[in-house]
Length: 336
Image (cartoon, rainbow, N blue to C red; front, side, top):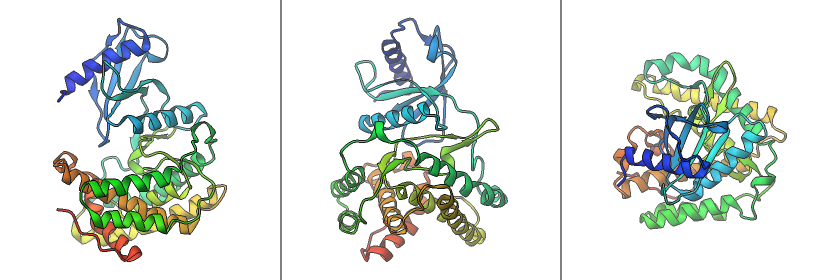
């Protein structure tokens, strides 16, 4: 297995080749960036770089090439039309120098909406969050859904592919109960309507705020889908805030989360061209819950759970299992 140093050395070689600048070197030791669980990221500066590669950049190394290609294409397109996401300066698929896909993008300023909030800080921050989070997330979703999706469209029904992929993964890890939920979703999907560019993972930790403006990050879950694909995920995460706090105040956090989620829907419906369809919202909520539970159980099946310690999905497994049971009548076993 490659070490981090090996990855950075291979990445530098790949950058040199792709940029056709063989004399590039790290201008400073790459600085690890935290906040994500899927890709590796560093703040980097290249000595001898010119043009788009000059200055502070973020290097993102992504383990799955198909997901990386979709993420990179979406982010590049959105940045080119003025949506607030970092511009992609250079990118490549896995190659002889580095066996993973990668990109170099602009370094965005700011902090996440919930930066530093846990325990008592989470409680103190809730009044501010109640004013800011739903409005900001609804605005970014509604603005995104108005972007021309033409350059990103394919003939594939991307959500049908997501459901098939989840079902196949559930069967692979021998979770028949979860595979049954995926089949239920296939049989109960509402009619497909107009589709738009969706983020798929729009939550407070994927938005940086700064006096110069907001920045939306992490397009690894992007799809061309019904707008409810985005709204359902954000609504689900606000309804079930993954915050660490004393048990005594958990009911207050839950109540506040539900209020934030209701506000999100009101603000989105006001800002969007078309209000989100409630039948689509309910269906996509179940899809996201199943997706998260499947990911958790895949980590367990592959003995990778320890690597994802602290991931917000862990604390949400119980509530999501209950929601799936109520909506589908399928009993889902809790992971261990």
